[in-house]
Image (cartoon, rainbow, N blue to C red):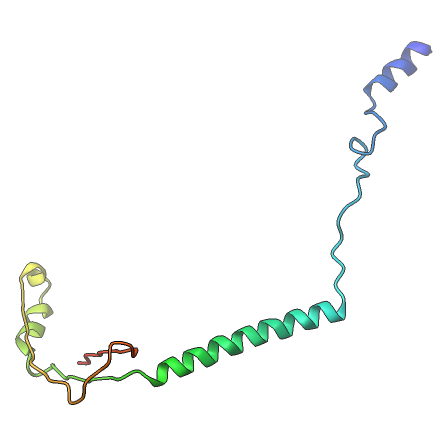
Length: 112
């Protein structure tokens, strides 16, 4: 009998916390104050970014140039897929009615 009990005990893992998987685990403890402060901090950050975006968008100057009729030959050339590698150049002269400063955020939009 002793041999059978010794064989069974030799196959058992050591009685340590690591081998028996009894190590203490970190448990996240959320409190109302922690959750609310995180929520309001995220809201304040998003509000700040939104205000910065709105203020920067107010300084944008936009110029609209319609080139559909002027560059019609390029549009007709691109309607056929065979002409994908042919070069087409369209030039439209324009002027700025007021001077744009370099420090301002500028956008030049060309719409068809």
